[in-house]
Length: 303
Image 1 (spheres, helix red, strand yellow):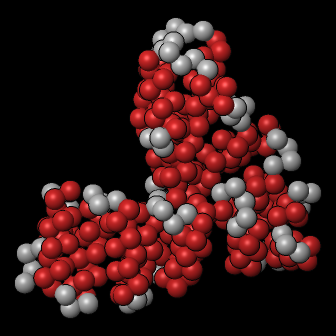
Image 2 (cartoon, rainbow, N blue to C red):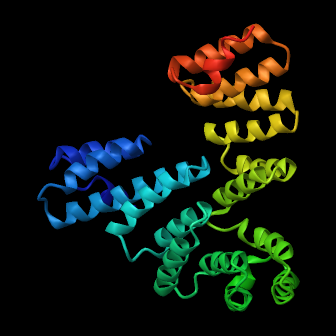
């Protein structure tokens, strides 16, 4: 947004001023609240339009942060707020579909995807996600129609990979399709949150090596999210990679010193490394920020 537009309206509405300042400072939750108050008031159309744009952007930034952290329900809530104000933004509808897909809500995801594609019929990422949903429900004919989409081929590094995808769908090879779609969507606008979604799915299946690989890709792109370091560390603990797990938990509590879950998981790593005193201190730190943390409550009492 142009600098002139960004600061238009300053001095005319205190809540608008507070919202823009909070947004520029990266305090997006504060920005949402201040801009909401502004939008509840009567104000001139140009100022309202600017306030709405920043309100939508703030919700969008928050949604991205929560999606990267695996909290897709909160991400969906923020995106729904944004879509209500800007229903003609195809990208918002696609991101909302992604959140629903990640929560295993295919019907809601499908609905948002159709709305995104109605707004932009050439939306390759939406077509890819629609194909994934059809594959999961074993609707192979619909999956083929979505994958055999002119723009979808451009998501693959080689034309032969797109042709392989179409063959795998025709052969109803679900695992083969999954791998090929993972390669295609890796570079999409939802690449990082896609890897979080896939990692969580592998972790639930007990496939921790694969989960770790996808967390590593996400971390290379967005390594400043403490939740992501904590989730990756939990997978490393399952793989008995204790030293690496502790390193990532140290990073998580450095990025957010009040992160109770990271302190608790750090305590587990320390205990498994034979550092009992340090572990108890970590559990005490967890209880300082969450007095009812179940793991910390139990573990802090152990000798």
